[in-house]
Image 1 (cartoon, rainbow, N blue to C red):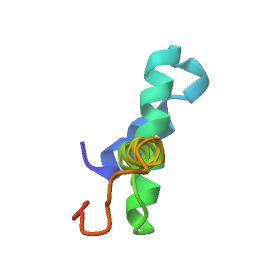
Image 2: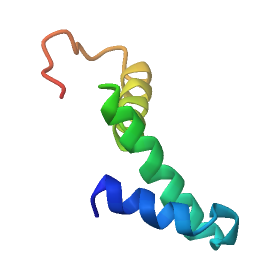
Image 3: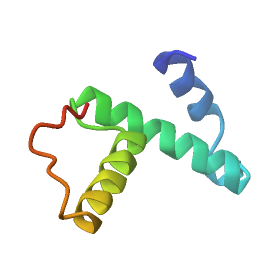
Length: 70
């Protein structure tokens, strides 16, 4: 679904009228779209970064200096 059609749907339906799961999905999509427009990581990318940071902190014996992480 393109951004324009997504906005059209959202303008017709109040987020308060959506069930919790659908509202959560719509809010995530809107957040990710704003992040992409600003050149920032999406929610999935942020989650992956957090997991990697946690793994790295749990394994200080490993050298990640030459790791190529996208």
